[in-house]
Amino acid sequence: MIAQLDAVAVEAIIIAALEALNEELDDADKIDVGPHTALFGVDAEIDSLSLVSVIVDVETALSVDHGLEVSLTDDRAMSREVSPFTDVQALKDYILELLEERR
Amino acid sequence: MDVLTGEHVALRPLEPGDAELTLAWRRGPRARLLLDGAGTVEEQRAWIASRPPTERNYVIELRDGRPVGMLSLVDIDLVNRRAESGRFLIGDEEAVRGVPAAVEAMLLLYRLAFDELGLERIYGIVAEENRRMIKWQRYLGMQEEGRLRRHVRIDGRPCDVICLGLLAEEYRAQAEPRMRALIAAAKPRKEMVG
Image (tube, rainbow over all chains, first blue to last red; front, side, top):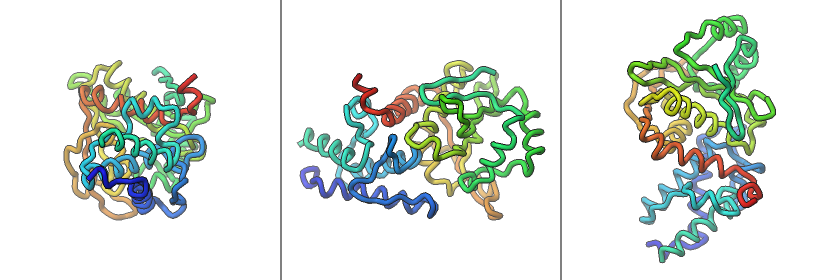
């Protein structure tokens, strides 16, 4: 199952989490969802409550749909030079890196 | 009551002079899911002035002194070693853009509760429809302990609330590390590698 998860699939999981977030936000707070959406930091599109919502949904999708148990906020993630939560691309790259290690 | 100082924010005691600002925050759309409070500035001022010693009410300030929200520890029971966290609101979302203000404010409150006051348990209630807050609290270690049916009215409608609780060991094992991780996630990378 893990081997079937490629960059496109991982990005789709993240985009789905962002779209689910948008469903919970008021119209004024909805974000533009796309491959380059900034997540958290100085250029953030979303606040920390929303970031956690995305993290939970992504971790759940990886676990329930793909049998992959990961913690996206462990010490390793936080010690990276580029935060996995900078934007969609950074998060996708980090997840793909985790997947590659498990193959 | 001391100021609690973090890396990005500080919690300073709520004062009657904060009445106008905090009432404005509570009237904002983001506070729609909070429980009802004072209706006027005078009522808010009187409410702040009458807080009992079993409460620690704080204004969340950025390190440059800008007030951006509020947070409280209430019903502090040093005999049973428990307290309720609540009145949590980021009132100025623009000011905290890119700043992990909410996470660090809650971490400072937990440190006060568990490390300084020696509490065993923090608990709270969140309106059922405030799903992002429930998800956030659960991710940061809170356990769902029950539901109070039609416990509050929001927009004139009865609403269930979800009861959440966090024990000291859960704070140390899960909440505190995840909070530190989320705070680190907002740092510019040059701070991480310098």
